[in-house]
Length: 118
Image (cartoon, rainbow, N blue to C red):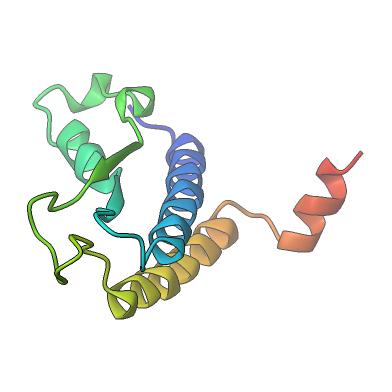
């Protein structure tokens, strides 16, 4: 069965990756033909949890993937489908999620940085 510490650490990794992807989307808001990317983790976690053999589920089977979203859709004539308002909201949501995960992992940000700086 999933160990809660492993799930939190994997979710922290996913949140960190999501932050990088959102930043990349924002940086490319004016790049012609750029397609928005997103991170999938929670969907795959739910699939793993919903397996009939839950006791043998393993968080290591849950991948963090970056996917190109709505590659056929564009908001503008230049083929770009990034909406800055959507990305800004996603960044704020992800920041809240990341901070909650840090708290649930038992880390205070400063304590964690200081202990791992050695």
